[in-house]
Length: 162
Image (tube, rainbow, N blue to C red; front, side, top):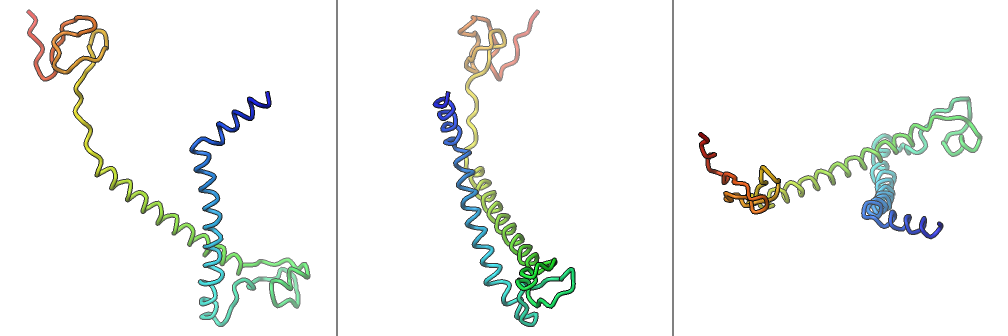
């Protein structure tokens, strides 16, 4: 029983969709770290400087009176706080990730449309179904090769019955 379960799991895990998903999650996590570093180390310091040397990581509102001047001090003193500076960093992080994903999807959609335009048009069909036995027969056939029923060739009017 264990071997069959193991074999089923291996089949499941090695399907293309599962492997693609795993690769996507791993790359997404690494990309998230890059964007977080971009926000914390490159985007926010100049914004903080423009706003009077503010470090957004230390912006907080204490929910009880304290002498703590930094978020770290307040957390060490177990003072409840609203750490809105970290929230601002995370919000900007999310906006950048969402924008990058949007641009990636837009690029992939453009490639997909280009591929569709370059694809050759579907060839005209050369066969049709016999109305009697439903076998495939040539468009120009006047008699079905399977059931020998007489059929009207495609593109010609039905013979007048009288």
